[in-house]
Image 1: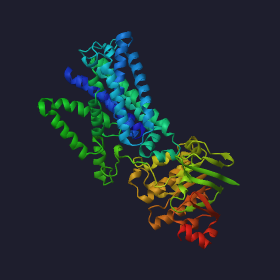
Image 2: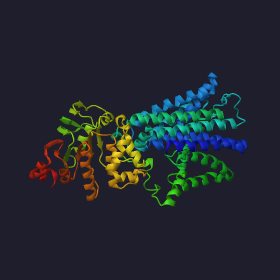
Image 3: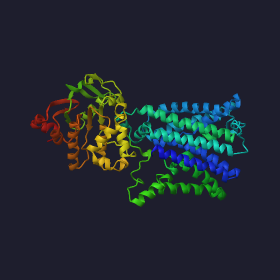
Image 4: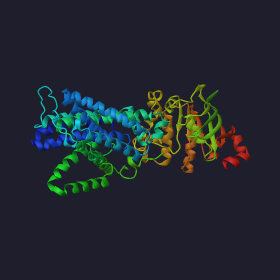
Amino acid sequence: MKLKSALIQITIATVLAALVPLVIHSEYALHVAVLALIFAVLAASWNLVSGYGGMFTFGHQAFFGLGAYVSALLAMHLGISTYLSIMIGTVFAMVAGVVICLPVLRLRGAPYIAIATLAFAEIVKLIADNLTSLTHGESGLAGIPPLSPIGAMTFSIADSRPYYYCALVLLAVTMVLVAAVLASPIGLAFGAIRDSQDAAESIGVDVTKYKVLLFMLSSALAGMAGGLFAHYVTVLTPSSILGIDVMVQIIAMALIGGLGTLFGPVVGAIILTVGLELLRSLGDYQLMLYGALLVIIIIVLPRGLSSLPMLIASAATKQPSLRGESWKHPIKQREP
Amino acid sequence: MALLELTGVEAGYAGVQVLWGVDLELREREIVALLGANGAGKTTVLRTISGIVKPWRGGISLQEQHLDGLSPREIVSRGVIHVPEGRHVFPRMSVVDNLRAGAYTERAWSHQRETLEDVYGLFPRLYERRSQFAGTLSGGEQQMLAIGRGLMARPKCLMIDEPSLGLAPKLVDAVLDLVIRIRDLGCTVLLVEQNAQRALEVAERAYVMEHGRILFAGASAAVAGDPAIRQAYLGL
Protein backbone atom coordinates (compact mmCIF):
# COMPACT_ATOMS: atom_id res chain seq x y z
CA MET A 1 0.00 0.00 0.00
CA LYS A 2 1.25 3.47 -0.83
CA LEU A 3 2.19 5.51 2.21
CA LYS A 4 0.07 8.48 1.24
CA SER A 5 -3.15 6.51 0.84
CA ALA A 6 -2.40 4.59 4.04
CA LEU A 7 -1.94 7.85 5.96
CA ILE A 8 -5.17 9.25 4.56
CA GLN A 9 -7.05 6.11 5.58
CA ILE A 10 -5.54 6.20 9.07
CA THR A 11 -6.50 9.86 9.46
CA ILE A 12 -10.08 9.27 8.35
CA ALA A 13 -10.43 6.24 10.62
CA THR A 14 -8.99 8.15 13.58
CA VAL A 15 -11.27 11.14 13.09
CA LEU A 16 -14.31 8.86 12.82
CA ALA A 17 -13.23 6.94 15.91
CA ALA A 18 -12.76 10.21 17.79
CA LEU A 19 -16.46 10.94 17.26
CA VAL A 20 -17.58 7.69 18.87
CA PRO A 21 -17.69 8.99 22.50
CA LEU A 22 -19.91 11.85 21.33
CA VAL A 23 -22.48 9.34 20.13
CA ILE A 24 -22.12 6.60 22.69
CA HIS A 25 -22.78 7.70 26.24
CA SER A 26 -22.92 4.34 27.95
CA GLU A 27 -19.92 3.96 30.25
CA TYR A 28 -19.99 0.20 29.70
CA ALA A 29 -19.89 0.51 25.90
CA LEU A 30 -16.98 2.94 26.13
CA HIS A 31 -15.13 0.55 28.41
CA VAL A 32 -15.44 -2.16 25.77
CA ALA A 33 -14.23 0.31 23.15
CA VAL A 34 -11.11 1.17 25.18
CA LEU A 35 -10.28 -2.52 25.52
CA ALA A 36 -10.81 -2.98 21.77
CA LEU A 37 -8.37 -0.16 21.01
CA ILE A 38 -5.70 -1.48 23.38
CA PHE A 39 -6.07 -4.95 21.90
CA ALA A 40 -5.88 -3.43 18.42
CA VAL A 41 -2.42 -2.03 19.27
CA LEU A 42 -1.41 -5.42 20.62
CA ALA A 43 -2.66 -7.32 17.57
CA ALA A 44 -1.04 -4.78 15.22
CA SER A 45 2.27 -5.19 17.00
CA TRP A 46 2.10 -8.98 16.73
CA ASN A 47 1.15 -8.64 13.08
CA LEU A 48 4.56 -7.00 12.54
CA VAL A 49 6.59 -10.08 13.48
CA SER A 50 4.15 -12.70 12.24
CA GLY A 51 2.30 -11.15 9.32
CA TYR A 52 5.09 -9.01 7.92
CA GLY A 53 8.13 -10.82 9.30
CA GLY A 54 6.89 -14.38 8.80
CA MET A 55 8.00 -15.42 12.31
CA PHE A 56 5.01 -17.04 13.94
CA THR A 57 5.70 -16.22 17.59
CA PHE A 58 3.49 -17.52 20.37
CA GLY A 59 4.68 -15.49 23.32
CA HIS A 60 3.60 -11.98 22.56
CA GLN A 61 1.62 -11.74 25.79
CA ALA A 62 4.94 -11.65 27.65
CA PHE A 63 5.78 -8.20 26.26
CA PHE A 64 2.27 -6.95 27.01
CA GLY A 65 2.53 -8.26 30.56
CA LEU A 66 6.06 -6.98 31.11
CA GLY A 67 5.08 -3.51 29.97
CA ALA A 68 2.06 -3.61 32.27
CA TYR A 69 3.78 -4.93 35.38
CA VAL A 70 6.93 -2.82 35.07
CA SER A 71 4.96 0.37 34.55
CA ALA A 72 2.48 -0.42 37.35
CA LEU A 73 5.18 -1.29 39.88
CA LEU A 74 7.30 1.77 39.05
CA ALA A 75 4.34 4.12 39.34
CA MET A 76 3.21 2.51 42.60
CA HIS A 77 6.53 2.29 44.39
CA LEU A 78 8.48 5.23 43.02
CA GLY A 79 5.53 7.54 42.49
CA ILE A 80 6.85 8.69 39.10
CA SER A 81 4.60 10.03 36.35
CA THR A 82 2.70 7.20 34.72
CA TYR A 83 3.90 8.33 31.30
CA LEU A 84 7.50 7.96 32.38
CA SER A 85 6.74 4.56 33.89
CA ILE A 86 5.02 3.43 30.69
CA MET A 87 8.09 4.53 28.72
CA ILE A 88 10.37 2.53 31.03
CA GLY A 89 8.01 -0.45 30.74
CA THR A 90 8.17 -0.09 26.95
CA VAL A 91 11.98 -0.12 26.98
CA PHE A 92 11.87 -3.13 29.28
CA ALA A 93 9.60 -5.02 26.89
CA MET A 94 11.84 -4.01 23.98
CA VAL A 95 14.94 -5.37 25.72
CA ALA A 96 13.05 -8.58 26.48
CA GLY A 97 12.15 -8.71 22.79
CA VAL A 98 15.80 -8.57 21.79
CA VAL A 99 16.68 -11.27 24.34
CA ILE A 100 14.05 -13.71 23.04
CA CYS A 101 14.92 -12.78 19.48
CA LEU A 102 18.46 -14.13 19.82
CA PRO A 103 17.52 -17.83 20.08
CA VAL A 104 14.72 -17.31 17.54
CA LEU A 105 17.29 -16.08 14.99
CA ARG A 106 18.80 -19.55 14.96
CA LEU A 107 15.46 -21.25 14.35
CA ARG A 108 14.03 -21.60 10.87
CA GLY A 109 10.95 -23.79 11.26
CA ALA A 110 7.77 -22.08 12.39
CA PRO A 111 6.91 -24.70 15.07
CA TYR A 112 10.26 -24.20 16.80
CA ILE A 113 9.82 -20.44 16.89
CA ALA A 114 6.33 -20.87 18.35
CA ILE A 115 7.57 -23.25 21.04
CA ALA A 116 10.60 -21.15 21.99
CA THR A 117 8.57 -17.96 22.35
CA LEU A 118 5.77 -19.74 24.21
CA ALA A 119 8.30 -21.15 26.67
CA PHE A 120 9.69 -17.66 27.22
CA ALA A 121 6.22 -16.27 27.91
CA GLU A 122 5.46 -19.10 30.33
CA ILE A 123 8.68 -18.32 32.21
CA VAL A 124 7.64 -14.69 32.50
CA LYS A 125 4.22 -15.79 33.76
CA LEU A 126 5.75 -18.17 36.32
CA ILE A 127 7.96 -15.38 37.61
CA ALA A 128 4.98 -13.06 37.95
CA ASP A 129 3.06 -15.86 39.69
CA ASN A 130 5.75 -16.58 42.21
CA LEU A 131 7.32 -13.21 42.86
CA THR A 132 4.46 -12.56 45.27
CA SER A 133 6.33 -9.96 47.31
CA LEU A 134 6.24 -7.73 44.22
CA THR A 135 3.27 -8.83 42.15
CA HIS A 136 1.00 -10.45 44.80
CA GLY A 137 0.66 -13.35 42.34
CA GLU A 138 -2.84 -14.48 41.45
CA SER A 139 -4.41 -12.50 44.27
CA GLY A 140 -3.69 -9.54 42.04
CA LEU A 141 -1.74 -6.32 42.02
CA ALA A 142 -4.28 -3.72 43.02
CA GLY A 143 -4.07 -0.01 43.62
CA ILE A 144 -2.26 0.86 40.40
CA PRO A 145 -2.59 4.62 39.93
CA PRO A 146 -4.65 5.78 36.94
CA LEU A 147 -2.87 7.81 34.25
CA SER A 148 -1.42 11.11 35.49
CA PRO A 149 -3.48 14.15 34.47
CA ILE A 150 -2.62 15.96 31.23
CA GLY A 151 -3.46 19.64 31.73
CA ALA A 152 -7.14 19.82 32.54
CA MET A 153 -7.77 16.20 31.52
CA THR A 154 -7.82 13.89 34.53
CA PHE A 155 -8.12 10.15 34.53
CA SER A 156 -10.13 7.98 36.88
CA ILE A 157 -11.60 4.49 36.87
CA ALA A 158 -15.07 6.00 36.80
CA ASP A 159 -14.66 7.69 33.43
CA SER A 160 -13.49 5.78 30.32
CA ARG A 161 -13.70 8.76 27.98
CA PRO A 162 -10.18 10.20 28.56
CA TYR A 163 -8.74 6.69 28.28
CA TYR A 164 -10.58 6.21 25.03
CA TYR A 165 -8.75 9.17 23.49
CA CYS A 166 -5.45 8.07 24.99
CA ALA A 167 -5.82 4.57 23.51
CA LEU A 168 -6.91 6.05 20.19
CA VAL A 169 -3.78 8.23 20.03
CA LEU A 170 -1.60 5.22 20.82
CA LEU A 171 -3.32 3.18 18.10
CA ALA A 172 -3.03 5.98 15.54
CA VAL A 173 0.67 6.44 16.33
CA THR A 174 1.17 2.68 16.04
CA MET A 175 -0.55 2.55 12.67
CA VAL A 176 1.40 5.51 11.28
CA LEU A 177 4.63 3.95 12.51
CA VAL A 178 3.81 0.58 10.93
CA ALA A 179 2.73 2.19 7.65
CA ALA A 180 5.86 4.36 7.49
CA VAL A 181 8.19 1.45 8.20
CA LEU A 182 6.49 -0.74 5.60
CA ALA A 183 6.65 1.96 2.93
CA SER A 184 10.37 2.52 3.55
CA PRO A 185 13.16 0.31 2.17
CA ILE A 186 13.03 -1.50 5.51
CA GLY A 187 9.54 -2.70 4.59
CA LEU A 188 10.90 -4.26 1.41
CA ALA A 189 13.52 -6.08 3.46
CA PHE A 190 10.84 -7.37 5.87
CA GLY A 191 8.77 -8.68 2.96
CA ALA A 192 11.81 -10.33 1.44
CA ILE A 193 12.70 -12.06 4.71
CA ARG A 194 9.13 -13.25 5.19
CA ASP A 195 8.81 -14.67 1.69
CA SER A 196 12.22 -16.29 1.29
CA GLN A 197 15.13 -15.95 3.64
CA ASP A 198 17.58 -17.44 1.18
CA ALA A 199 16.59 -15.08 -1.58
CA ALA A 200 16.65 -12.15 0.85
CA GLU A 201 20.25 -13.02 1.68
CA SER A 202 21.10 -13.34 -2.00
CA ILE A 203 20.01 -9.75 -2.68
CA GLY A 204 22.10 -8.44 0.19
CA VAL A 205 19.54 -8.02 2.97
CA ASP A 206 21.08 -8.30 6.43
CA VAL A 207 18.56 -10.84 7.73
CA THR A 208 19.76 -10.81 11.35
CA LYS A 209 19.69 -7.04 11.66
CA TYR A 210 16.16 -6.72 10.33
CA LYS A 211 14.79 -9.57 12.41
CA VAL A 212 16.15 -7.95 15.57
CA LEU A 213 14.69 -4.62 14.49
CA LEU A 214 11.31 -6.21 13.86
CA PHE A 215 11.30 -7.84 17.28
CA MET A 216 12.33 -4.61 18.99
CA LEU A 217 9.58 -2.60 17.35
CA SER A 218 6.94 -5.23 17.89
CA SER A 219 7.72 -5.92 21.55
CA ALA A 220 8.05 -2.21 22.36
CA LEU A 221 4.57 -1.51 20.98
CA ALA A 222 3.14 -4.46 22.90
CA GLY A 223 4.83 -3.19 26.08
CA MET A 224 3.36 0.26 25.58
CA ALA A 225 -0.11 -1.20 25.12
CA GLY A 226 0.47 -3.17 28.34
CA GLY A 227 1.41 -0.01 30.23
CA LEU A 228 -1.75 1.76 29.16
CA PHE A 229 -3.81 -1.32 30.03
CA ALA A 230 -2.31 -1.46 33.56
CA HIS A 231 -3.17 2.17 34.34
CA TYR A 232 -6.62 1.71 32.87
CA VAL A 233 -7.86 -1.43 34.62
CA THR A 234 -5.67 -0.67 37.70
CA VAL A 235 -5.64 -4.35 38.72
CA LEU A 236 -3.29 -6.95 37.23
CA THR A 237 -3.14 -10.70 37.65
CA PRO A 238 -0.65 -12.93 35.84
CA SER A 239 -3.37 -15.05 34.25
CA SER A 240 -5.30 -12.05 32.92
CA ILE A 241 -2.41 -10.51 30.98
CA LEU A 242 0.28 -13.20 30.77
CA GLY A 243 -1.98 -16.17 30.16
CA ILE A 244 -1.94 -18.08 26.90
CA ASP A 245 -5.54 -17.04 26.21
CA VAL A 246 -4.27 -13.50 25.61
CA MET A 247 -2.08 -14.91 22.85
CA VAL A 248 -4.95 -16.93 21.42
CA GLN A 249 -7.01 -13.75 21.28
CA ILE A 250 -4.23 -11.85 19.53
CA ILE A 251 -3.92 -14.59 16.91
CA ALA A 252 -7.69 -14.77 16.40
CA MET A 253 -7.85 -11.00 15.92
CA ALA A 254 -5.01 -10.92 13.40
CA LEU A 255 -6.30 -13.94 11.47
CA ILE A 256 -9.89 -12.77 11.31
CA GLY A 257 -8.97 -9.24 10.32
CA GLY A 258 -6.23 -10.32 7.93
CA LEU A 259 -2.67 -11.30 8.80
CA GLY A 260 -0.04 -9.20 7.08
CA THR A 261 -2.40 -6.34 6.27
CA LEU A 262 -2.25 -2.87 7.77
CA PHE A 263 -5.82 -2.60 9.04
CA GLY A 264 -6.59 -6.31 9.47
CA PRO A 265 -5.55 -6.67 13.12
CA VAL A 266 -7.42 -3.49 14.07
CA VAL A 267 -10.60 -4.67 12.37
CA GLY A 268 -10.18 -8.07 14.01
CA ALA A 269 -9.63 -6.58 17.47
CA ILE A 270 -12.72 -4.42 17.23
CA ILE A 271 -14.92 -7.18 15.87
CA LEU A 272 -13.80 -9.77 18.40
CA THR A 273 -13.89 -7.51 21.45
CA VAL A 274 -17.23 -5.95 20.58
CA GLY A 275 -18.63 -9.21 19.19
CA LEU A 276 -17.84 -11.13 22.34
CA GLU A 277 -19.70 -8.52 24.37
CA LEU A 278 -22.71 -8.58 22.04
CA LEU A 279 -22.94 -12.34 22.39
CA ARG A 280 -22.86 -12.09 26.19
CA SER A 281 -26.65 -12.26 26.41
CA LEU A 282 -26.47 -15.79 25.05
CA GLY A 283 -24.94 -16.96 28.30
CA ASP A 284 -23.40 -20.40 28.00
CA TYR A 285 -23.81 -20.40 24.25
CA GLN A 286 -21.63 -17.31 23.89
CA LEU A 287 -18.29 -19.07 23.40
CA MET A 288 -19.85 -21.78 21.25
CA LEU A 289 -21.22 -19.31 18.75
CA TYR A 290 -18.03 -17.27 18.96
CA GLY A 291 -15.95 -20.32 18.05
CA ALA A 292 -18.26 -21.24 15.19
CA LEU A 293 -18.02 -17.70 13.77
CA LEU A 294 -14.22 -17.83 13.86
CA VAL A 295 -14.19 -21.11 11.97
CA ILE A 296 -16.60 -19.84 9.33
CA ILE A 297 -14.67 -16.62 8.74
CA ILE A 298 -11.37 -18.45 8.40
CA ILE A 299 -12.85 -20.94 5.93
CA VAL A 300 -14.70 -18.38 3.83
CA LEU A 301 -12.10 -15.61 4.01
CA PRO A 302 -8.66 -17.17 4.52
CA ARG A 303 -7.02 -13.78 4.07
CA GLY A 304 -9.25 -12.17 6.65
CA LEU A 305 -12.06 -9.68 6.64
CA SER A 306 -9.87 -6.89 5.32
CA SER A 307 -9.51 -8.84 2.05
CA LEU A 308 -13.25 -8.53 1.49
CA PRO A 309 -13.17 -5.24 -0.49
CA MET A 310 -10.34 -6.62 -2.65
CA LEU A 311 -12.25 -9.84 -3.28
CA ILE A 312 -15.36 -7.95 -4.32
CA ALA A 313 -13.28 -5.74 -6.60
CA SER A 314 -11.52 -8.69 -8.20
CA ALA A 315 -14.79 -10.55 -8.65
CA ALA A 316 -16.23 -7.50 -10.38
CA THR A 317 -13.29 -7.14 -12.79
CA LYS A 318 -12.63 -10.90 -13.09
CA GLN A 319 -9.00 -10.44 -12.00
CA PRO A 320 -7.25 -13.44 -10.49
CA SER A 321 -7.55 -13.08 -6.73
CA LEU A 322 -5.20 -14.37 -4.11
CA ARG A 323 -7.86 -16.11 -2.11
CA GLY A 324 -7.05 -19.70 -1.40
CA GLU A 325 -4.16 -21.63 -2.88
CA SER A 326 -1.60 -19.01 -3.80
CA TRP A 327 -1.63 -17.54 -0.35
CA LYS A 328 1.03 -19.13 1.81
CA HIS A 329 0.24 -19.30 5.47
CA PRO A 330 3.27 -18.41 7.59
CA ILE A 331 2.88 -21.68 9.49
CA LYS A 332 3.53 -23.56 6.28
CA GLN A 333 6.53 -21.51 5.22
CA ARG A 334 8.97 -23.36 3.02
CA GLU A 335 11.76 -25.24 4.74
CA PRO A 336 15.23 -24.66 3.33
CA MET B 1 42.19 -9.09 -17.10
CA ALA B 2 40.37 -11.39 -14.77
CA LEU B 3 37.22 -9.99 -13.20
CA LEU B 4 36.65 -12.78 -10.73
CA GLU B 5 39.28 -15.29 -9.78
CA LEU B 6 39.19 -18.40 -7.60
CA THR B 7 42.49 -20.02 -6.66
CA GLY B 8 42.66 -23.35 -4.88
CA VAL B 9 39.31 -22.91 -3.17
CA GLU B 10 38.37 -25.64 -0.72
CA ALA B 11 35.03 -25.50 1.04
CA GLY B 12 32.24 -27.64 2.43
CA TYR B 13 29.45 -27.98 4.92
CA ALA B 14 29.85 -28.91 8.62
CA GLY B 15 33.02 -30.95 8.21
CA VAL B 16 32.18 -32.52 4.86
CA GLN B 17 34.50 -31.19 2.22
CA VAL B 18 32.84 -30.55 -1.12
CA LEU B 19 35.30 -28.44 -3.08
CA TRP B 20 38.87 -29.68 -3.47
CA GLY B 21 41.02 -26.91 -4.87
CA VAL B 22 38.85 -25.15 -7.42
CA ASP B 23 40.57 -22.73 -9.81
CA LEU B 24 38.28 -20.60 -11.90
CA GLU B 25 38.58 -17.35 -13.75
CA LEU B 26 35.97 -15.05 -15.25
CA ARG B 27 36.96 -12.26 -17.60
CA GLU B 28 35.00 -9.10 -18.24
CA ARG B 29 31.97 -9.44 -20.47
CA GLU B 30 31.98 -13.13 -21.04
CA ILE B 31 29.62 -15.99 -20.47
CA VAL B 32 31.16 -18.95 -18.72
CA ALA B 33 29.34 -22.22 -18.23
CA LEU B 34 29.95 -24.37 -15.17
CA LEU B 35 28.93 -27.92 -16.02
CA GLY B 36 28.89 -31.30 -14.36
CA ALA B 37 26.64 -33.98 -12.99
CA ASN B 38 24.41 -33.59 -9.93
CA GLY B 39 26.48 -33.33 -6.77
CA ALA B 40 29.64 -32.26 -8.58
CA GLY B 41 29.80 -29.10 -6.47
CA LYS B 42 28.59 -26.48 -8.96
CA THR B 43 26.12 -24.85 -6.61
CA THR B 44 28.66 -24.93 -3.79
CA VAL B 45 31.05 -22.96 -6.01
CA LEU B 46 28.38 -20.27 -6.40
CA ARG B 47 27.52 -20.31 -2.72
CA THR B 48 31.18 -19.96 -1.81
CA ILE B 49 31.68 -17.02 -4.15
CA SER B 50 28.58 -15.29 -2.77
CA GLY B 51 29.77 -15.77 0.81
CA ILE B 52 26.98 -18.04 2.04
CA VAL B 53 29.57 -20.81 2.41
CA LYS B 54 32.92 -19.66 3.79
CA PRO B 55 35.98 -21.03 1.96
CA TRP B 56 38.29 -23.13 4.14
CA ARG B 57 41.36 -22.52 2.02
CA GLY B 58 42.22 -20.65 -1.14
CA GLY B 59 41.35 -17.19 -2.35
CA ILE B 60 38.52 -15.44 -4.17
CA SER B 61 39.08 -12.02 -5.64
CA LEU B 62 37.08 -9.52 -7.62
CA GLN B 63 39.20 -7.13 -9.68
CA GLU B 64 42.17 -8.06 -7.53
CA GLN B 65 40.38 -7.35 -4.27
CA HIS B 66 39.69 -10.10 -1.77
CA LEU B 67 36.13 -11.36 -1.52
CA ASP B 68 36.73 -14.36 0.72
CA GLY B 69 35.66 -13.77 4.30
CA LEU B 70 33.27 -10.95 3.43
CA SER B 71 29.60 -11.28 4.37
CA PRO B 72 27.05 -12.10 1.64
CA ARG B 73 25.79 -8.55 1.97
CA GLU B 74 29.20 -7.00 1.31
CA ILE B 75 29.77 -9.30 -1.64
CA VAL B 76 26.42 -8.27 -3.14
CA SER B 77 27.28 -4.61 -2.66
CA ARG B 78 30.53 -5.16 -4.60
CA GLY B 79 28.52 -6.36 -7.56
CA VAL B 80 28.63 -10.14 -7.41
CA ILE B 81 25.06 -11.40 -7.51
CA HIS B 82 23.82 -14.94 -7.10
CA VAL B 83 20.46 -15.88 -8.61
CA PRO B 84 19.71 -19.01 -6.62
CA GLU B 85 18.30 -22.19 -8.06
CA GLY B 86 14.57 -22.77 -7.88
CA ARG B 87 13.70 -19.14 -8.57
CA HIS B 88 12.91 -18.05 -4.99
CA VAL B 89 10.95 -14.95 -5.86
CA PHE B 90 9.06 -13.26 -3.02
CA PRO B 91 5.57 -14.67 -3.71
CA ARG B 92 3.52 -12.25 -1.63
CA MET B 93 5.24 -9.13 -2.89
CA SER B 94 4.32 -7.44 -6.16
CA VAL B 95 6.59 -7.87 -9.17
CA VAL B 96 7.82 -4.29 -8.91
CA ASP B 97 8.54 -4.67 -5.19
CA ASN B 98 10.48 -7.84 -5.94
CA LEU B 99 12.59 -5.86 -8.38
CA ARG B 100 13.00 -2.90 -6.03
CA ALA B 101 14.14 -5.28 -3.32
CA GLY B 102 16.85 -6.42 -5.72
CA ALA B 103 18.32 -2.91 -5.63
CA TYR B 104 18.65 -3.16 -1.90
CA THR B 105 22.32 -2.27 -1.57
CA GLU B 106 23.23 1.41 -1.31
CA ARG B 107 25.17 1.29 -4.55
CA ALA B 108 22.12 0.18 -6.51
CA TRP B 109 19.35 1.93 -4.57
CA SER B 110 20.11 5.41 -5.91
CA HIS B 111 20.00 4.15 -9.52
CA GLN B 112 16.80 2.22 -8.97
CA ARG B 113 14.71 4.08 -11.53
CA GLU B 114 17.11 3.74 -14.47
CA THR B 115 17.89 0.11 -13.70
CA LEU B 116 14.20 -0.66 -13.45
CA GLU B 117 13.71 0.76 -16.94
CA ASP B 118 16.58 -1.35 -18.28
CA VAL B 119 15.12 -4.47 -16.68
CA TYR B 120 11.66 -3.75 -18.06
CA GLY B 121 13.34 -3.30 -21.45
CA LEU B 122 14.82 -6.77 -21.17
CA PHE B 123 11.66 -8.31 -19.76
CA PRO B 124 8.60 -6.53 -21.17
CA ARG B 125 6.53 -9.27 -19.59
CA LEU B 126 7.52 -8.14 -16.12
CA TYR B 127 6.38 -4.64 -16.94
CA GLU B 128 2.96 -5.95 -17.94
CA ARG B 129 2.70 -7.81 -14.68
CA ARG B 130 4.37 -5.26 -12.44
CA SER B 131 1.55 -4.88 -9.92
CA GLN B 132 0.73 -8.57 -9.71
CA PHE B 133 1.86 -10.75 -6.80
CA ALA B 134 5.00 -12.63 -7.84
CA GLY B 135 3.45 -15.88 -6.61
CA THR B 136 0.84 -15.68 -9.37
CA LEU B 137 3.43 -15.65 -12.19
CA SER B 138 4.15 -18.71 -14.31
CA GLY B 139 7.36 -20.64 -13.80
CA GLY B 140 9.09 -18.96 -16.73
CA GLU B 141 8.02 -15.52 -15.58
CA GLN B 142 9.26 -16.24 -12.08
CA GLN B 143 12.64 -17.22 -13.50
CA MET B 144 12.76 -13.96 -15.43
CA LEU B 145 11.81 -12.09 -12.28
CA ALA B 146 14.59 -13.80 -10.33
CA ILE B 147 17.11 -12.81 -13.00
CA GLY B 148 15.66 -9.31 -13.27
CA ARG B 149 15.89 -8.93 -9.52
CA GLY B 150 19.55 -9.93 -9.74
CA LEU B 151 20.13 -7.29 -12.41
CA MET B 152 18.58 -4.62 -10.21
CA ALA B 153 21.70 -4.80 -8.04
CA ARG B 154 23.73 -3.58 -11.07
CA PRO B 155 26.03 -6.59 -11.02
CA LYS B 156 29.52 -6.80 -12.45
CA CYS B 157 29.13 -10.53 -12.31
CA LEU B 158 25.84 -12.39 -12.33
CA MET B 159 25.84 -16.02 -11.29
CA ILE B 160 22.73 -17.88 -12.41
CA ASP B 161 22.03 -21.31 -10.98
CA GLU B 162 20.01 -23.65 -13.23
CA PRO B 163 17.84 -21.06 -14.97
CA SER B 164 16.26 -23.64 -17.26
CA LEU B 165 15.22 -25.98 -14.46
CA GLY B 166 11.62 -27.05 -14.93
CA LEU B 167 10.98 -24.80 -17.92
CA ALA B 168 9.45 -25.79 -21.26
CA PRO B 169 12.01 -26.06 -24.13
CA LYS B 170 10.75 -22.87 -25.74
CA LEU B 171 11.23 -20.95 -22.49
CA VAL B 172 14.69 -22.42 -22.04
CA ASP B 173 15.66 -20.81 -25.34
CA ALA B 174 14.16 -17.50 -24.26
CA VAL B 175 16.02 -17.53 -20.95
CA LEU B 176 19.35 -18.42 -22.55
CA ASP B 177 18.90 -15.71 -25.20
CA LEU B 178 18.46 -13.30 -22.34
CA VAL B 179 21.75 -14.41 -20.86
CA ILE B 180 23.42 -13.25 -24.07
CA ARG B 181 21.63 -9.91 -23.93
CA ILE B 182 22.65 -9.45 -20.30
CA ARG B 183 26.28 -10.08 -21.25
CA ASP B 184 25.93 -7.54 -24.08
CA LEU B 185 24.91 -4.97 -21.47
CA GLY B 186 28.39 -5.35 -19.99
CA CYS B 187 27.83 -7.94 -17.30
CA THR B 188 29.84 -11.11 -16.85
CA VAL B 189 27.70 -14.22 -16.47
CA LEU B 190 28.57 -17.45 -14.73
CA LEU B 191 25.98 -19.98 -15.80
CA VAL B 192 25.40 -23.22 -13.97
CA GLU B 193 23.39 -25.57 -16.14
CA GLN B 194 22.30 -29.16 -16.34
CA ASN B 195 21.34 -28.58 -19.94
CA ALA B 196 24.96 -28.75 -21.13
CA GLN B 197 24.16 -28.69 -24.83
CA ARG B 198 22.32 -25.37 -24.64
CA ALA B 199 24.75 -23.87 -22.13
CA LEU B 200 27.69 -24.59 -24.43
CA GLU B 201 25.89 -22.85 -27.27
CA VAL B 202 25.73 -19.53 -25.40
CA ALA B 203 28.94 -19.68 -23.37
CA GLU B 204 32.36 -18.71 -24.64
CA ARG B 205 34.19 -20.92 -22.20
CA ALA B 206 33.24 -23.78 -19.95
CA TYR B 207 34.44 -25.55 -16.85
CA VAL B 208 33.55 -29.16 -16.22
CA MET B 209 33.38 -30.33 -12.62
CA GLU B 210 33.32 -33.67 -10.93
CA HIS B 211 33.61 -34.60 -7.24
CA GLY B 212 34.39 -31.04 -6.28
CA ARG B 213 37.27 -30.60 -8.72
CA ILE B 214 37.60 -28.85 -12.04
CA LEU B 215 38.31 -31.59 -14.56
CA PHE B 216 38.43 -29.57 -17.70
CA ALA B 217 38.49 -25.91 -18.65
CA GLY B 218 38.48 -24.48 -22.10
CA ALA B 219 36.60 -22.91 -24.96
CA SER B 220 33.02 -24.13 -25.32
CA ALA B 221 33.79 -25.56 -28.72
CA ALA B 222 36.65 -27.61 -27.31
CA VAL B 223 34.44 -29.00 -24.55
CA ALA B 224 31.63 -29.73 -26.95
CA GLY B 225 34.08 -31.33 -29.37
CA ASP B 226 35.76 -33.65 -26.92
CA PRO B 227 33.98 -37.02 -27.19
CA ALA B 228 35.37 -38.32 -23.90
CA ILE B 229 34.12 -35.33 -21.89
CA ARG B 230 30.82 -35.31 -23.70
CA GLN B 231 30.17 -38.88 -22.88
CA ALA B 232 31.60 -39.17 -19.40
CA TYR B 233 30.50 -35.95 -17.79
CA LEU B 234 27.92 -34.17 -19.85
CA GLY B 235 25.76 -37.05 -20.97
CA LEU B 236 25.61 -35.72 -24.52
